Length: 397
Image (cartoon, rainbow, N blue to C red):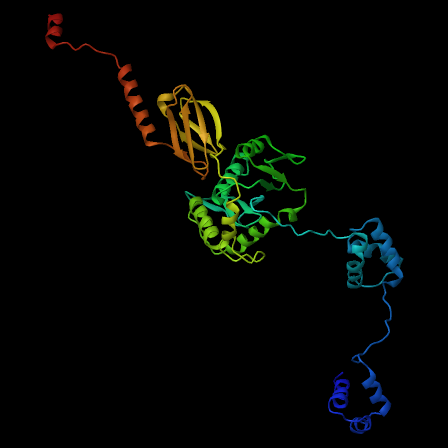
């Protein structure tokens, strides 16, 4: 190729004649003329000798026609008894070329979201367990939300994937984003999806209180919520590595700070702008936040002689003066409280513990129990008359 280019340069640029080029290079004049007439560079080539797979291509086509996703290993096993002696690479390369003819790959349309149209949600599980105090760690999940238009995100730590915890996570994410989109997009998450694209009763009630719609992605279609999937990938690479958490509150504080200082103010790779700037534009057209929907756990119990209620393996003390009375227990994402049904007296108010198998006793309940023990002791002691010793002397005399 270098010689061909040199001949053309000398002749067409410098004006050297064919006779002189033949003398300099030792080539014949016809060879020089052929090189000058050729508009493309010369290259080495030889006629294809064929492949060991050629006699079996029709059989490969037949197998793929019957089962387009047939693995290459199985195809090789089926054509080996017919005499195929080629290697794995030859067959795999050929399958890579012809398989799309029998199993056309899915094509995707680039989606453009309008401001305030959707908010995609997903669950992300940190690799390490979260410290929850008292020397314990616990498996946690993060409810991740991402607005389709601005790509602004938010996250909420939960320790259970039951419906109340999922709804509490959704509520916290929406309140972090500052407004309501038209539609909440989820995959077929257990607890939210009842089957057939229908929501569970609790999730439908939650969306009804917020006046928002819902949409569930089809089964096995992660690309449908790729916006939040890419945010999760960014969290795995940027948020979690190299961090140490004191407890669940510290985890949530660091997560909120990461969204405020790193994720939302960054230049988004696809948008070429900052999500926090587009969020201002999106909030202007989204619905305002209503009063917070009630997603707390509630149940009624009677205060037992051993005045404690149990939730999530932990025992929380109740007012011992209310033994025998019915109270409504209420568990939020931060506290455990109970009030009497008849008089609305406070039976307990404790910070919720995410550590397991603990007994949480309020100081005022210990004091009330101590006073009750003293009162019972005073009531049960008999009143004994105290007489003077002279009375006994008179009896003896």
